[in-house]
Length: 141
Image 1: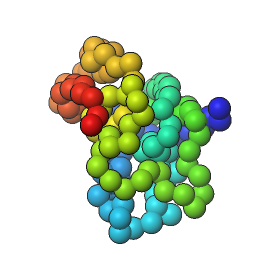
Image 2 (image 1 turned 60 degrees about the horizontal axis):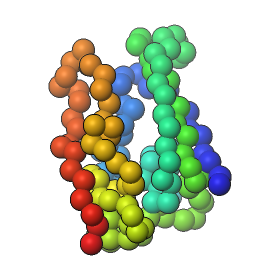
Image 3 (image 1 turned 60 degrees about the vertical axis):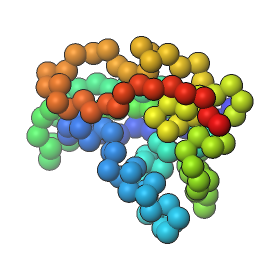
């Protein structure tokens, strides 16, 4: 099983999840090629990657042209995706092709999910920066 490692540096925690970029890609999937999509963002939405591990650490001073704080994030995806010339998923209804035994969680196929494990338990200095949808698990049909 191949794996893919992504490393990125961010100036704010908010930048770590590029939701607007991913959402724009999803909304324009049928019209626009993914050629211009950054490889990190493309890997994040790769359909066949079903294992993910990430870590983040505050690393001030890594880039002298940025102010502090600075955060380094590393994610490893399995199996590898982000293949040149291929789109990250097939266009269609979310979870319509989940493998048997998988569930639909936040419009993504998932297996062995418990809501209490699907979200981080950490406390944030500013709770308003956490914009996490309600955890609902249901079988795909």
